Image 1 (cartoon, rainbow, N blue to C red):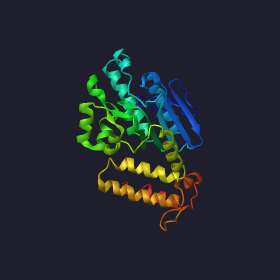
Image 2: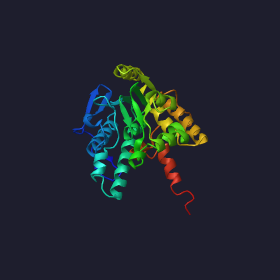
Image 3: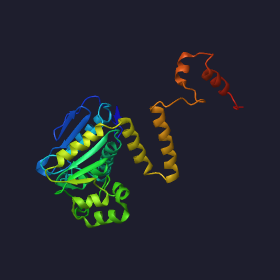
Image 4: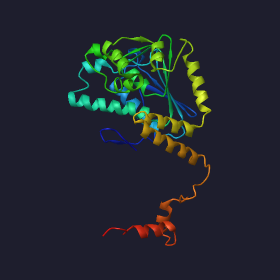
Length: 296
């Protein structure tokens, strides 16, 4: 079961039905294709819901290790569907607030997947489309790809990463330039700034994406999960705290790889002793000794 920001529980045991995106699996690889090519894959309310539910499903599938995101029809995504906003479908300000919080949940779910995520970008990648890529681990784009945050010229502001994630990726100065000017930039500048990983020829995107997938498939997936988790979490912490978690992560890796027991560790699970109620168990004895210690 999963819980949305609104508190609704939802089962993710079965793959959700989708109309506006294509979902495919090939072994340990899941591919999501945003499929509204007639509007450059703009994120309608329905597409956003399908995308979120698909991410929730992927999150709970242990057999999946890699997720590829792409758009249909020669474009990645042009962000939120402005026609729905103009038609009042986002509702009054509190409903807008709730919808933006839902989209933040969508991006956070993508970012926190214990899978490696790859945005495979062609054509336009703007607004919410760019916000999607910033929640991914890798971004490969074509030479013709164009990106930016044009919200300022439509009288709106980004709501789920266009300022918050971007400033963590490229700094305050460049984030202000991208958002305040609203220009559309060439793919190479995205690499130069640190938003993208690679630019490839216009006819090489699928091959380059597949090559990255195949390399990642060769990796130790437990190691990839741990590295992704610690990097994502430590970027928000001060250096001293981050190094503490880094040290614990190294010890965790040692434990996972079973490099040897610690002499003064229990080497047993306390809950097993709890279930057995064995009075001779050292865990049971120490609990009995501890329970009333200094409680007067």
